Length: 264
Image 1 (cartoon, one colour):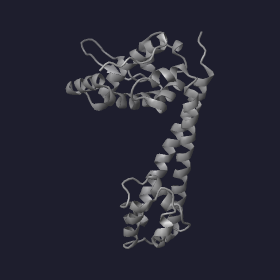
Image 2 (cartoon, helix red, strand yellow):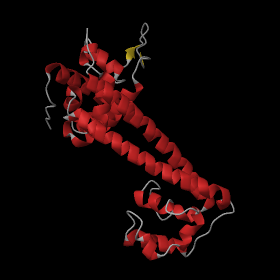
Image 3 (cartoon, one colour):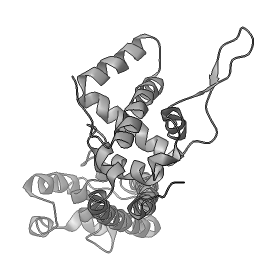
Image 4 (spheres, helix red, strand yellow):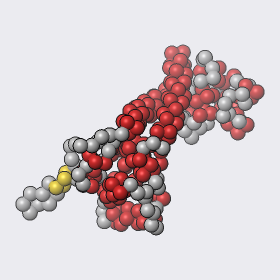
C-alpha cells in the first residue's frame, strides 16, 4: 500500500487550478486581440504582445476605450509599467487613431477583458507563490526541480500528478502514466505502436514542456534530441523519446531519493 503525502495532494489542486486559469487567460487574450483588431487595428501595432503588462494597464485605465486617444503624457507616465519609451509609442499612435463604429458596444468588452487578464495574471502569481512554498515540503517536487529546465511549474505539477512513486511498480508504468511511452501494436510481420488511453494529460503536458526546456539546457540531452530528429522523428516524437529516457531517470531519482546528476 502507498500513501500520497498531503503536500502533493495540495500541489495537485493548486496546479490544476493554475492550468485552468492559464487556459482561461489564453482564451480571453485571443478574444481581446480579435476585438481590438476590429475596433482599433492600429492599437495592436504599438505592442508586439497584447498580454504585455504595460499595454493591459494602458487599456484598462479608462472607462471608455476612445479616451485612450486623448491621454496626455503626464497621465501616461502615471500608468504602471508605462515609461517614456512606451509613452512615446502611444503618443505616435494617438496622432493617427481611428475607431470603428463598433467601439460603442465592443469597447466595454475590450476593457472588461483587459481587466480580466490582469486579474488572472495576479491569481496565477499567487498560486505560483503557494506552490513554491509547498515545493520545499515535497520530496518529489524537489527531486524533479533539480532537473535543468523543469523549474517551479513543471516540478510542482508533476509532483501533484504523480503523488507517490510507490504507485508505480516499475519505470515503464510511470512512463506510460506520463505519456512518454507507447504500447506495442504489432501484428504478424507488421510492427507498430499506439498511444495508451490511460495517460494523465496534465502530467504529459508538464513533461513535454519540461523536457523541451531541459534539452536546451543540457548538451547531452540536446544531442539526443537532434539524433532523433535526424532519424526522421517529428519535434514532439523526439521530445517524447527524450522524455522516455528522463522517466527512467526520474523513477530512479525518486526511488533512491537522489537529485539529478548532470553530465554534459
